[in-house]
Image 1: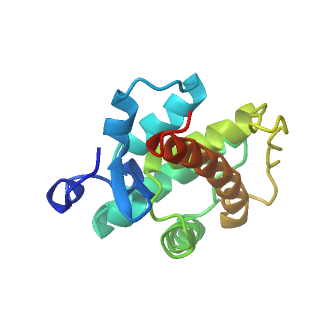
Image 2 (image 1 turned 180 degrees about the vertical axis):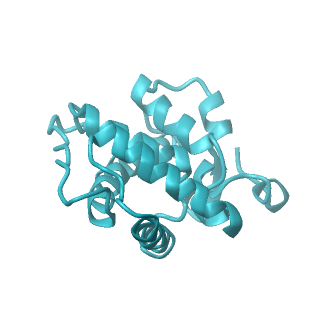
Length: 172
């Protein structure tokens, strides 16, 4: 299950679980017969779906950010920026936010999953507390709205990571 450096270079950062100084492939972990919920499988599948944001080539980054804005607007019901100039500024700010504020290891599909989870609602933490959806605010899709959704998603992702780390350590 432990990855050597040669295999690591071929994988997306989002598909790697770091634990006790080692890197584990989520593909290999998922292949072990462990009990995961359908929801946990969705999180893992979205992590395995492609490169992490920090690994996407700069010339492809804008397309991904535009898709996040458009799909985010479709999922949340908000409007998209009214002008191309404003859309460009929002896209740049989303890129900076994702890359420089702790989300560069998320895949594109993880960000879309976070938006969908927020829209669906009803996710319960292992403690039984329900995750509160972030209601849309602002005039159009914006960084602040996305940041609150990603913060919630990271709580979910971190709980799953902890569960997988416990399995690696021999706990069930």
